Length: 110
Image (cartoon, rainbow, N blue to C red):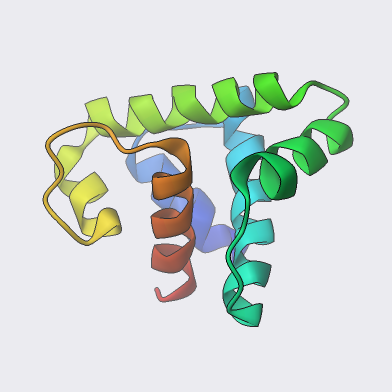
């Protein structure tokens, strides 16, 4: 997947590399893209958080929290763009796994 598409999308939300979750989210989208290619479901904790935590030498909890901070920032910054990415009208901030899947799909198809 084109990492520039992901970075440009995050920057539209004013999410920069100052957030630890920025890097975790980019890594997560790369992993999820592989699952999309294989048309297989993924387990957020086992397939996403744990491997990213190992890569960045941190706990899976810190990975989850870092991504959640970014998702919350995106939600607060631009709800219209968030709904464009999700593909439906949302009334509350999406879960990490919901956003990660939609974000990956959105960036793959840009």
